[in-house]
Length: 108
Image (cartoon, rainbow, N blue to C red; front, side):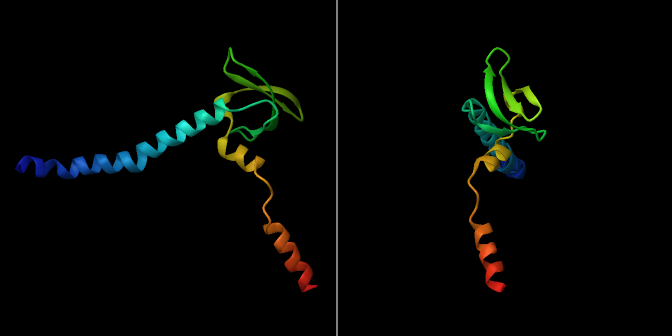
């Protein structure tokens, strides 16, 4: 019993590390895999390097996506598409701008 109490802090430390570091990373990786697998033609995306474009086609052989940008068509790996930035790009405009514009007009 005495040995168990000596190892209890170490065991507790591993449990805390698992629940606060490892598990959330695994959950986020799973969300990114689902996002990459659910991409379809016509989706507007942003790559992790900051390239904006629209999905034109998929290459299942290379597990890649062909994106049309202002410069032409470019091929990227599915894993290089940023889930957070793409979701921000596709979400509707927030009504905050309208309320700020109204406040400015009322001051005049």
